Length: 418
Image 1 (cartoon, helix red, strand yellow):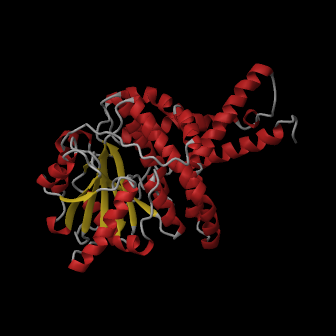
Image 2 (spheres, one colour):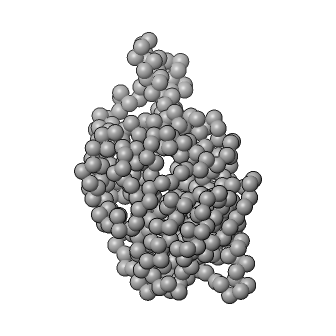
């Protein structure tokens, strides 16, 4: 069976890479359609809308103004801003805009995860005074929010969902090629991962903003998600309890994407560090719980967490391929003996899916030019992944500075996501 000494390593490696590729490829196509749904349009649920803000004076005012104009009864939601270790006038701007400001000072526990945990404890205390909410909706200070966001979350809550992620859109998809390719990446993930998995009954993953979580889940299981990717940590912690994350495709939040490659690099490195951290802590527990509960959604969560490891193996295989070209045959390449139709479908699909999604989100012509640079964005993940693995045990939070101040009116030309 093995013709070369390296086949003992390389043949199983190629089988694993092929199975991973096919798994994501098949799931991805499940995101090209949406289930029909009869929505409940009667506002019933009460929300605590929470914005975690650290030195966000440039953008916080526009977000608060935007949140006050949501198409949802004003008496059914309150807006809270966590002024977290701020050294500027974020708190003053937010208060003047009509938000309830909660000032937090903690020089040791600085991350967003710690700030949210602190805020949830304050909400639980408020219940003693009769301030009771059904759920929290969480946003970042640089966001803008679609007017129907809370109505869409109300619909999902009334249908029994406990943890919900909204559509992660871009506030500035046409500013630079970096923000443009970042936006394409998010549009693709929204469809081929979150929507696709929700369509077939698997779990989506929280994205850090545009999230909705019921108060009863937070009280019963606690937040306890304070790593560099607190959203992913809470998703996986909830999955081990049998609670999946649902995708609300029409609950749209617009996020500011990095303008420069350096900003993009720093943010993605933090994500990689956090995902390795979460994977190494949660996969053993999730494998056991998946078997105990006989819940395929938990095992799928494990596969999601293994994506950076998959990329590292892919980089190793690619390097071995180049080495084989230089020195001659070192191992059996199983792809050379596989049906050509399979490989062709995979290669075409990698380029076809993003194109379909650009049509679905009605992206401007500029995004189609950015699509030419999209492969560069994808391949730069390789060194970032290796750095994330090396620094996976470091937990120093790196704040992303936001400067793109704009109103929701400036976004109207981008609406109508497919």
